[in-house]
Length: 378
Image (cartoon, rainbow, N blue to C red):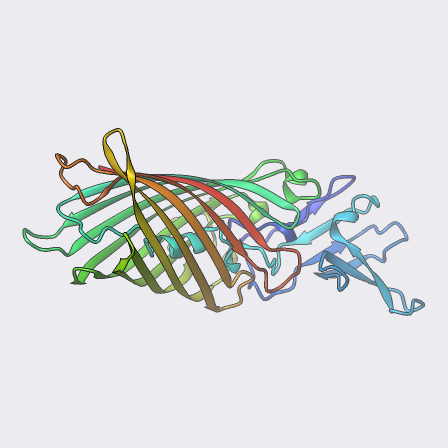
């Protein structure tokens, strides 16, 4: 996933890796400055390499062209305007502030962290059970947009008769597509996509009836288009806490907290070679609240409920472009019947989630997405 090859754009089509919220790893640190090389500036721009920086006036990704005769010593040209001027260039993936190692919410690093804290935690779990879920996301950042689809299967095992401690295994599969937005990278390179699959194993231990702690480890393998970074691997280790608080009207409040660590690795299961590997390490802190209110109405003879939640995530250590991520969700659920195995659990839950992340490295490059999700327990 840490492709060292450059992105080449020529003629009247522009591709800027700057605006990709990247779904793959990258070959350099997020702190590195991206560059592009111009070999034929047509007499307008001197040939050479230029750092890509935010234009001071509006934060748009641009290059600064020195012109000593000008009062400012030169001028800025947005990367997206180079093709309009007929200037071909080669862009080095470099320290793209939107690359996968920078914590973009659409990428597998953040997904591994998000999966570790379940705001739909089942405090009254009994016996073995399975959950099948999925989501569809429309995301956008700067001049890029795209879609993400996720399918996730989870299985919980009661370790022994009478024990409430549960072993949980989760297998998420994700597909991310980069759209062909005008001035975007896919407009120059055609279809760009990333596929990731992983496995997470956790042990949920009850401290009391209303407090559970879950240590968890996970591994993710990603296959991605070269133009958005290539292939790579990631491991994560987390500890989460879920606390249920009653006495809030007719509903209940759930408080979730998590601390975690992620690191890119090279175990040899991807197509990544040694030269493309960058060791990226981050600590994560994730905290949220969820309020569930039972409804008086019944659907298909089943009890119903509505749940609203908010989760804030903070990433630290190695440079991240998206360090602070906000999620807000609302969902509607159907409960199991009294004659079924577990009357205390959701049978089906559907909802919508909005995600926002400010970009600490470049203006006008915030990440926003809307997701539709569904989960079925059996």
